[in-house]
Image (tube, rainbow, N blue to C red; front, side, top):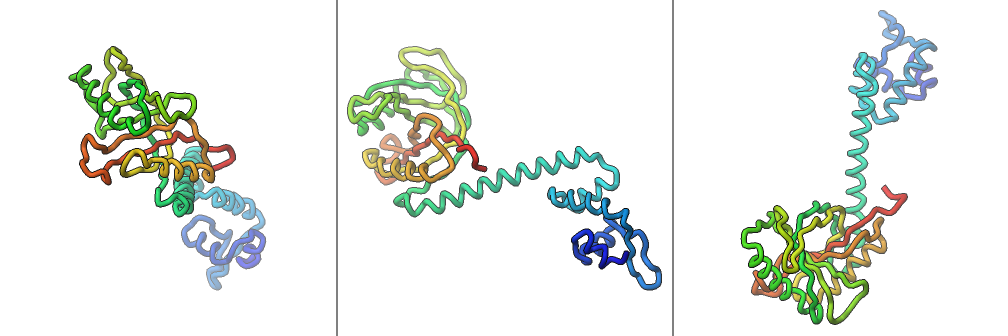
Length: 269
């Protein structure tokens, strides 16, 4: 049959069949040397259907050519599977970025981002503070005491220090917190200081600049985002202290990052 009739049977364009012939991927059974007309046979229908299946699976023309030249089928299909998984990961990140941008106008200028944190070895210390205003200065005091107890310890670079709240419910006063400072190697536990692993993973983050007493607006923005996201909380909230009164004189430069561990909801990419 001529190329036009064959194209109808295989439901593709004449242009595609001519292209496949030109690159040697799928050639007609015969080509008239005088007219140049391409002739195809019924037996070629199944052969073209295999090419269609490969194209539906996203294989490139070059990959299909390799298959038809005798290269290992499983190797090429696993290669394609790996490529599709990477594309899926990129697509998921792009969807999350779009969701963050869509929700940004509703977060009072706080921008929520998603990060992957490593697992840290941390030196921890629990203490009680009268109220939230005492958390930053108490953090500075605990760090100074930590340096006295372990004069030779080495911090990770970039540094990572955070606070978690250990009370089972919210308290306005007499609050127990755990301070954690990431170090390169664990040392002996003593005098209330305990070394342990701080599990990493996916976290939603929002930065708060300024006085600690005003951090509630950042929390509100983060939890508003969480209600419309594809995630749920998967652990205790951390407050990462980046800059404060210990290294910045201007209050506008004080910086805390709220980090919420996340778990992907079922049924989402």
